Length: 371
Image (cartoon, rainbow, N blue to C red):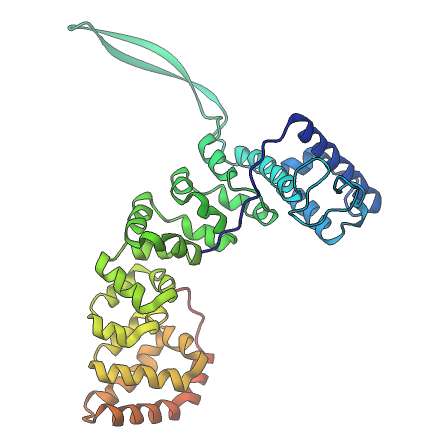
């Protein structure tokens, strides 16, 4: 697990911050003069609008020339490397972090605000002494605030330009989710990964942490959706599938709960026969295959892998394959009485003979959602 490394923490003085702001404004003016930045863009736009800031940073990365005299070190040499120290005493990466954090905080404060603040009137009854009660009318303000804790926690890990386009998605994470994943938020580098976190409840994340132990970070970084699957298993079976599948385990654990219901009937020796096939085979095909004994299941899996090549995942993963093709293959093997070596030869010949037909069948199938 390798997370992006945040720039070294530094306490900036007020003079340094003022120098950075002045430098950014001069940089904007230089780009506006060169035509690389729209003349109407203001500094307020830059630190309030993630799209504007992202575009500004990309412009610098692609065209640093106009800023050679502004983004420079103490000797006046241009700085383009993130680790390069500027004349103000901080690195270019730290300046970017300051801008990204400032912009992120403003955006998240707006995105996590409640309804417009209003005043509501309530009637409250409270006990006075032992026998008496007191009823009074009180007013309190509701709505209007933002989720300070969530904003603060997310902003702790905001430092990179690629995070800016994802702010709208990060804002939809719950405070509990943000607190549970902590620095692993740095691994959320796509909308798909962020959206995979949305369904995860606190209890699910906690149980996945307990079961995965030191592997939790690796699982989350590889596929956040795997946490839901990890939480479904006992410690013994989690350990078994983790060892059996290696790094492919995170793909397996990310599969839907319905699929795990089909897997639950497999004993460990039979599960070992399927191996990585469990990462992509459909529930329908797995259930069809379970009609075979362990030797026949083993040789048929290997025969299909060899015959169908790189298309085997799409084929075995399509739910229609079970009834359209696999059922006939399984039935043809049910009553064969041969040694395993001879069985393997028969299965390979059969699968090879139908490979072209299966490819044609696959080309005509409707697309399948993630299973």
